[in-house]
Amino acid sequence: MKLYYTHEKGPHMQIEVVADNAALGRAAAERILQTYADRELQVLGVATGGTPATTYRELTKRSEGRLSTLRLAALDEYVGLPADHPASYTTFVLEQIAKPLGIPAGQVGVPRAEAHDLVAAAASFEQQLRDNGGVDLQILGIGSNGHIGFNEPGSQADSRTRAVKLADRTRRDNARFFDSIDDVPREALTQGIGTILEARRILLLASGERKAAALAHAMEQAPSADCPASWLQRHPDVLVIADEAAASALSNRPEINTEA
Ligand code: F6R
Picture 1: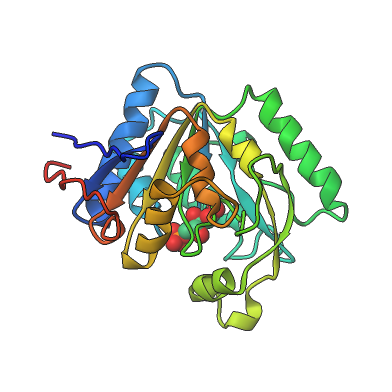
Picture 2: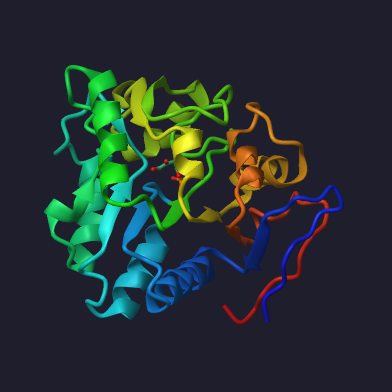
């Protein structure tokens, strides 16, 4: 049984709450495979980071090679890291998503943050998204400060792919992927909020207590640049899959789906 969240202030995102990150991975993979089975998935937008790792593992296990024709579109990339750096998002998407799913590198698009001209790289990434017919299903994570992609607080609803400065909190949160915080880049090239909102469907994944306040803000307060994920309320088809810890600050607590 799936229980969906409704909030008295109305327009709302749907949410499914599951026990933990392992159950989140199973529920998200199932959702992605269902979209594919419905013939509504050709371009999958992929988040990187810690939260979706179980989702990609489950997807690999359950898809048995069926997804190899998909195109993948990444959300963002660090500026100042070579694309083949172990902590780059290009490496993440190729090694942790494309390769296990049998998707050739030629079907993978990541913003080219190594480019000398970041304005041109942003425009060409947006052009590539359009050329591929847009994103059918966008997987998102949420930052502890409410960011989606690397759209930090202050990001407006109509923002497009662009170079941004990373918030100190984001750099601290992501230091775990680097030898030290000094190695965490200070800038990134990210899809904008307006770019993300053009995806046909959105699947927002939230795991852990560290995300609880940001998720409650995103779902229960009026959309604003203070919490960029709150702009998702303007999208007509968003499903949030959260584990119990990430859902713990919601004022209208949905029951937990124990079958996921
Ligand atoms: C990653 C991305 C970010 C992350 C967010 C959560 O491509 O765009 O918005 O989704 O920072 O990261 P984790 O899952 O590592 O907590």
